[in-house]
Image 1 (cartoon, rainbow, N blue to C red):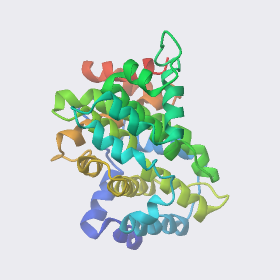
Image 2 (image 1 turned 60 degrees about the vertical axis):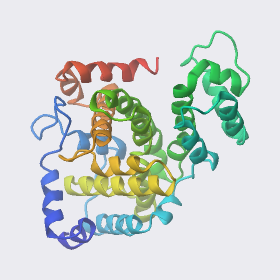
Image 3 (image 1 turned 120 degrees about the vertical axis):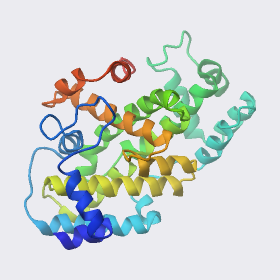
Length: 322
């Protein structure tokens, strides 16, 4: 086991850190997350993977070796998830320009017919509670404003990337991962201002954070066949760590703003950028929210221990879907 973990983590020092992470998971200040109380990463992984256990070193090594290979070849990793619509990178660049006119934004969105349909469907959903039915991009812009459109476009573009998957394990995990990703994006964007980070970049980082995890589940489908996903603590932490690296490299491949991939890699580190701090806080709160809503043991106690600012974000993660 040490050999394949050493290959994955890049040597003995990183292997020691990986083993240590199985004993303690970092968390934003105030999020209850200790071995004796509630290990958020492990609870989230096991909620995604299901309750069955597969014993044996060989399948674990096969999955992690393949993930390590894909981390060196992100183009191949990106091929395991649907690509974001080609217009999205152009739109994201335009949306960062405060001087961009509404008519120019509407023109760019209109280049992708399926994207237009998704945006119109979204703005007419109960989430936005529009007074009258909206039938065009111009009307959507008037309802949303520029910042609202930025977040909506990102969410609409990423939904099929994460939420629609083939394969037994990926199909089971995809809607759960998407639910957490939406909440992570929202929570990170809300946490960003107080940390000095850009809310929209935080939103993008939240949506992208678990793309690599979907790749990992698709790989597991190929390697394991009908077998259950391994659930040892060391494997779970190693898979989540490798998935994070994949997410960062896929974000770069998709031409997302460079700070997004950097934040995904740095989230949870002591010297993290403000954007990475916002992502880490949003990710933890979103994981806790989905586990709390699913009734996972330990989540209620962890939620009750949140400090005021995090509690307010945690509560909004529920109300956003009502």
